[in-house]
Image (cartoon, rainbow, N blue to C red; front, top):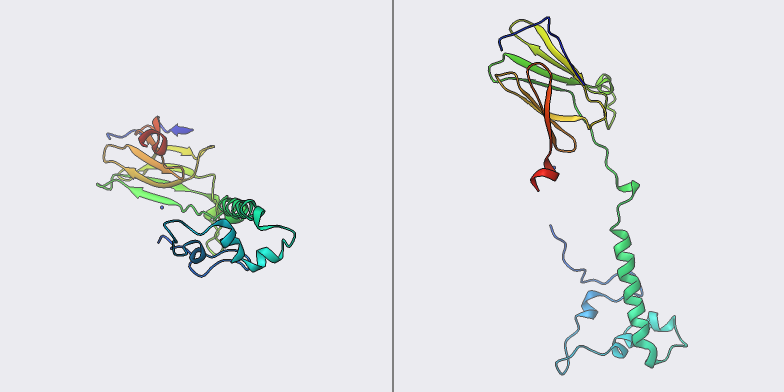
Length: 196
């Protein structure tokens, strides 16, 4: 993944309240469900059923004895529909952009750069940039010490370069990749898997 250049040596990411105004026509509001208690109990299902004229009119053949079953089915259908709305789909995807990176060590001795060909057109930014090329340079000698590429991993989002020549790359999946002065990778830490 990384190619060392030996000819150039160096010394060195508000909770909403309950809807008090009711929902779609024909569905009970939260206010109805929170009606005052009577004799220490909630209103019966039959009483609650009678307070829903639209629902009752749609089921004229139902007797009051079956209203409890109808109400349970109705509530189950509402809950099921609500759960389905929580399932993310393709339409909920958000474009993610990965900028080029240029980071220098604190002493300005080394520089790490990550550039994607997708970022060349400055007038039209393309989401989900990839194919980043890595370059590590000794700024004192102006020599490139190693080069590398993103490979099949996620694009980089940040990096750190130490004065000793070590580079740590953070990817879009919050992975940390450690690379030494010669371009050798010394480990990869999946932050969410290893820490949490």
